[in-house]
Length: 546
Image 1: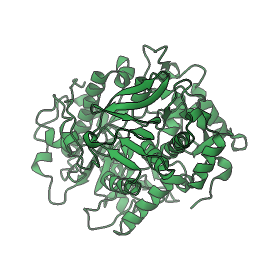
Image 2: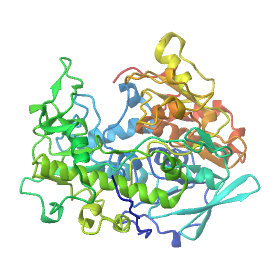
Image 3: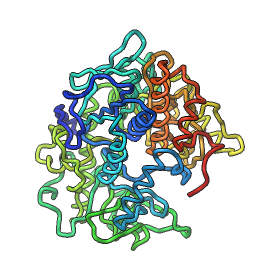
Image 4: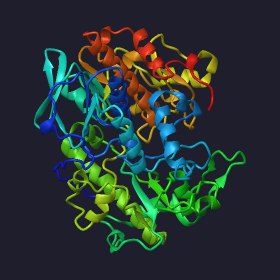
């Protein structure tokens, strides 16, 4: 259905870049690779504990899935997620930022008590949080890590943009788990491992989310489609129409006013509520309770444009750079086709990709797909990276599985607890396709452990999921921690990833301070440091509702 396209490999420097690596100090206590939620939290926590930190990010943006990938609706699972650590700070900053401009954050997920952040605003807020630690924390955007430096089995730094960044601890917080592979750490990929790859493994769908907005004065000409994007077909029209139709069902709030009763096919005014975003370019305030979404003027396309990674594409998307570029372009094309469907078939002619998100940086302008000639104006304004749900996962000293999570969700009186717990999550095991029994990991997951409904509950995350079995000087701090495929569906969301990243930052700081490897730091000292920073480390000490 979709033609394969290749991305340009040019990498530009970021407009928001604090430092260019050519003028960077060469030695740090901690180097964090990847400025997503986990990497940001790890960097801030380590800096606050006295470590000198370098945060390296390949794109021109910070924020990962919550900003650079365009997923501005926070997946919390429970209001209790807002009571912990740096995610709590982020939520407070978001509320203050929009509150000062008399804007609601209750614009997504069909109800009150949702945290919805326009990606450009989310990046501003995260940049301010990073700026406060600038005395000990340096951020490098537009910085590609090409190699890991090792001394025996100990990681001692990375090579990025042809410069060495040496450190006592490296934290892998990138989207794919690339540093795990470069460091020679054992990892899982699909239902195989680095030592025993699975030929027909698959990983969850990616999505090239895009922010679209309503242009009251008309869509700029360069963002109007003159013809269908390549590959637009009746098969695609049927796919989109099953989700979204002009005569579709309108949004209906449940009596408690906290969520949507969603039915397919939806009306456009219902669809945009799901990922609705605050819009500072709109002089009027709105929330999801006003006219069933008709007032909303900005939303994220992150439903109906999942791109499946099947067969050999699946694991090669993670492990093969050329396949990753091709699949990323396919996912981008699918989103362009969806925008065309909205403009043309749905006749929503005042909507198109937002041209005020700030995505059109040198990095993005270097990511044009060779097969999308003539669509560069659209590409420049699209997200800086795809939403990646599953990549390599560390094989750590402990592994969190779907069975362990499922126990607590079936019976709250028997929730598994860990003496070394460093974070508490609440989100369900949300797996986007690739969940058939033969795609799960023998001995770690069973199909019966993964709910077919969106059901979840509180669960603890032990410290050992951050620590490799044998490699030293290395920690994991994103969706690449030591979990099964099923458990990955519950720990890949923004709030819990931020908490886990904060734990990795505390462990790294204690390791450098005590001149010893992270695996030799006691869990108690990590828990104490986190609790002093306001992190809820165990279910027993979680704070009540806001």
